[in-house]
Length: 138
Image (cartoon, rainbow, N blue to C red):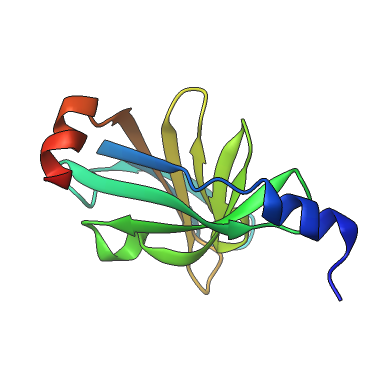
């Protein structure tokens, strides 16, 4: 039996979409060397062309603070069926390592290697023009 909060969230659920075009910025790399050594570097973006990203609310969450979402992208490593849409704040995936901020449309992805080294990828995004959305749907 569904809880009252789940039932109410389902009744008020509205599917939303966020259609973005994103440009990857230079990434920051943190690597570990000898014990106690840490190096910081900046590398060219993995993706040189603009990336299409479509975030879609897929089903209601268990309370009013979030819904489930999926992320489709022209870059395979940015796709996931398991994301959380935090109303008015951001979309999160990959245990918080992948985020899209609703306020500034900044998308970030942290990639961690087995040795603890990490790449911090950042994307400047903008919403696809509403006229373009209408043309795409026809």
